[in-house]
Image 1 (cartoon, rainbow, N blue to C red):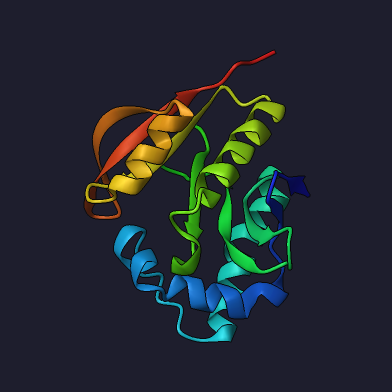
Image 2: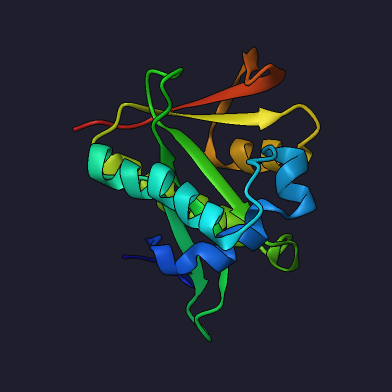
Length: 167
């Protein structure tokens, strides 16, 4: 468990499939991250099994559920994702629309960066769609630097990098 001022970041479980179905089909998720083709709770459970749950087993990290400390409402996901196409994990996050613009994404992302430091990672990446100005601002606040345009899943996106202090 990771605790911040207002949030709890915990490992995702199969019980989170209904929430993931909602998040993965949110218009802003599809626009900024992509359509994962998940249309049922069973597909959401399969997505969790093949993604975050497998990542926990293989790498010891992955996306986590973001809950509000007050009330326990599940509002999004944030964490570290190891992709085959990158030589270091990337920071990923997504919130339901009702919870954007309130500093939750920045709070969770800061905690994820601290987690990466605790794991003694040397660097993190972030992949951002060209039009996602909110994420570009958030990454700049965290100290990420724009590394330029890359081709990602048949689309041009921006790659950001953050060098981390190592022990």
